[in-house]
Image (cartoon, rainbow, N blue to C red):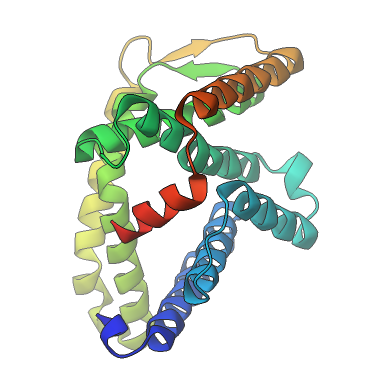
Amino acid sequence: CLMALSKYTATLTAGLLICCFMLITGFSPSMTRAGLVSGLSLGAWYYGRAIHPLVLLSVAAAITVLLRPAYIWGDIGWCLSFAAFTGIIIIAPLLRRYFWARGDNPPFLIGILVDTAAAQLATLPIILFSFGQYAAYALPANMAVLPLVPLAMALTFIAGVVALALPGLVSFVAWPATLVLKYMIWVIVKIAGLPGAQTEVVFTAYHLVGSYLFLLIVCLWLWRKTRLDFRDNGDKQNNV
């Protein structure tokens, strides 16, 4: 709706919202990555440019590592955040193009399933190597809570803003976010308690490197089959 005023107004407002959200949620590796990616994408959109996902990923990773070099070898959250992001912007579009015709999109829930599966494929080697455990029900757990994540983030952001401006109303404003978050925690706890929910595995550094080499080969094969233009694909997704 802000585009009706001007592109500059829309960009400035979106940028301020990104900054406010990061200030409220904190500068964790995942939030820093999300803020950088959103800011870079917003700037490219304002100037009418399209950023290749690999360039966007590389620039965001380079900036975070420049600010905190220890991220790259000592922070599992940073590694998982960028791995999941890679799965969503690289693997998921390739799968969408391979299984659905050009210009078509899968149904909403199927699209979430594809994105979730792609993110899990990209993060699974790191999880296995770091924790030595495999969560058998991770995909259905994510499917049960993932559609509510944007709502939970929005409600939490609203509660945080109200807490700063009108502390007396925070208990009333925060209850919707609390309700959604309690449901998400309940689902996770219940699924984690199912028989066989976690399996111990032995996953060495050789397995880690081999897994990502295999994913790289699969992605290259999918790209040769689909000839996906990632810039064009990103523009279409943003327009949707």
